[in-house]
Length: 255
Ligand SMILES: NC(=O)c1ccc[n+]([C@@H]2O[C@H](COP(=O)([O-])OP(=O)(O)OC[C@H]3O[C@@H](n4cnc5c(N)ncnc54)[C@H](OP(=O)(O)O)[C@@H]3O)[C@@H](O)[C@H]2O)c1
Image (tube, rainbow, N blue to C red; front, side, top):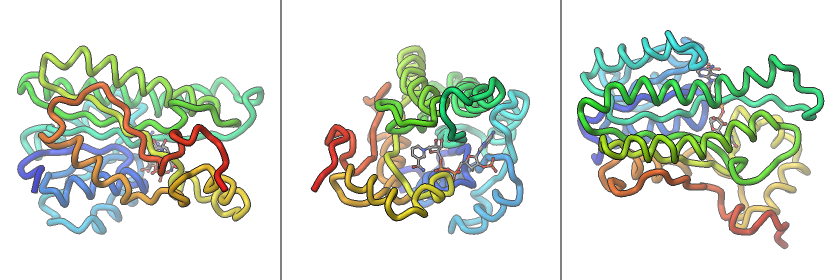
C-alpha cells in the first residue's frame, strides 16, 4: 500500500484512462476524489472502483471553469484533510481539418486540455505548497512529440502540457512538489472507440506499435502509482510515454 493515507484528486475520472489511474491510486491505499462534469458518470465510476465507499469522494467539475476548480480542491481538502496527488486526465478532442476549425472549437479544446489543466495544478499547489509536499501527474499524449492530422488543437494542447510540466516542475521543486507527465500512446477508450471500430484503421496503427497492440487503461497503473509515490521523489519535469514502443520506432510501419 504505497499510497496509504495519501489523498489523490483525479480529473477526467469518469473516462477510461482517468478511471484506471484513479483506481490505481485507490488500490494502492489512497483516498481519492473523482472529478469530471457528469455527476451520473462519476457515481457509476465510484460504484465500480472497488475500494471502500468512505475513501471515495466525487465532485462534479468542469475544469474549464475556475470557480469549479477552486471548489474541487477545497472540497477535496475539507473531505480528506490534504491533497497529496493531482492527476489531470480530463481532455477532449475535436477532429476536423485545420482549415475548418472555428474560433470556438479551437478555444474549447485549449480551455479544457491546457487552461483547465493549468488551473487545476495552480489550485492544488495552493494546498501542497504550505505542506511542502505534492505529486502532480499531467496527462499528455504521443502528440506532444509527433503530429497527427485533423486534431490540430489537441496536438497543440498536448505539446503545451509537456512544456507546462517542465515549467511547474522547475518552479515548484523548492516546495518538494514533483510535476511529471504521462503521455499515453494509442489506447482503446471512449475517445478513440470510433477510430478503432474500423479494423483497417486499427490495424494501420497497430503496425506502428512494436508491441503489436493498442494500449488498455490498465497499462497506466504501474507508472501512475510510481509517480504518485515516494519511489519517484527525485524525478521531476519528465514526460513518460506509455506507447508500446511507438515513439522508439519513429513512426515506421513494422512487418
Ligand atoms: N485514448 C487515447 O488513446 C489517449 C491517448 C493519449 C492521451 N489521451 C488523453 O487521456 C485523457 C483521458 O482520455 P480518455 O481516452 O480516457 O478519454 P475519455 O474516456 O473520453 O475521458 C475523458 C474524460 O474527461 C472528462 N472531461 C471532458 N471535458 C471535461 C471538462 N471540461 N471538465 C472536466 N472533465 C472533463 C470526461 O468526463 P465528462 O465528459 O463527464 O466531463 C471524461 O471523464 C485525455 O486527456 C486524453 O487527451 C488519450
